[in-house]
Length: 437
Image (cartoon, rainbow, N blue to C red; front, side, top):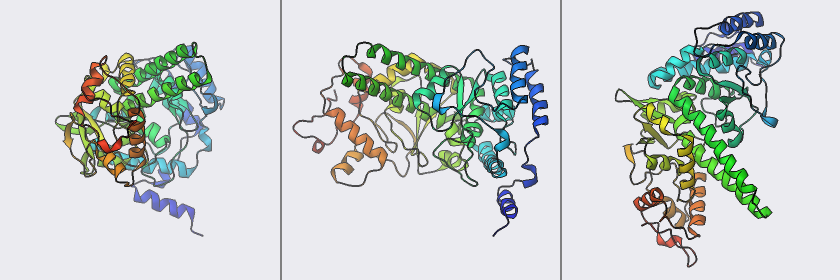
């Protein structure tokens, strides 16, 4: 049987990590640091003495961290609530963090935007051990007004964005297995080493909060409609429509906060946490000839609609990345605009993650690039479709089975007019395409 310590030393050496350094601080030392953090007043959001006292006593008494308690807000997580029991983390967990962070640092310093790198310095993300959430939560709150809320799995969009509306960010306590670069589900390496530094980019933090407020608007719309529902069918339809709107709002979030790029001094830089949590995808998103890269302006409704109508997969690197010229444009993405865009997206045909669409400002045509109609030709020819293509074709055909008009919606009409007419072989006598003019 191989010696475990020797195996771990080999893994550490491979990633430039010293195994003896992968030792968490003692509880006494962590409490000493926490006391120093809580006493700071030279921060944007200083913590009141009574709040600090209660917070410190909870940490000192051994209560596991669950939901931040430094503001007057809280969130109800129900079955998704979790806790970080710091002492239960294994050496393998800390080493997996140390190796991932070491690999991330190499790609982040080459490809991440400058604001993100400053945020990592502020929160001391580059350590050799997983952060204690009591300490990390206090630092985040002092600098940004946001806090952490621990969860046990991927949570529904409605819960995720409701947390955002109250400036809580859901974080897991699970660390990916050793030497795992990309993980489709969230873990500490994604939530903390990927996301936390983005809170220090004011425009990104604001749009995250705005997504939460948009979620609350969608929920309020749903509740109002349910008050007049007359049947179980109506109730199901209202719930399904709200879930659909949240899906489209989630795409706006995905292609910006999670997988967004920005231009800085004429160079592509990454700020999306989903990209930066994977060293491999960080490099790929900027340099790979395989991916499409499209320039967008969040102030332009057409570009936001392009994001909301684009489906994707989470199981591999993205096929299309969207690039902004500057962060300030994000601040125009208000809750009301998000709501308007997702309602419009509900009435339009959607695109797959490989497509380039008429009207796109294309920076790079990837090797996997497709035209807007290729998915239909593949469908008609009986060729295999990936899950993204299959979902998109089925959704669009179902939508086209209804007679929809866009006379009352200039944005939807303009977006439709720019698209090529779909192949006529798609339609039967009972299914006709949406008019494109």
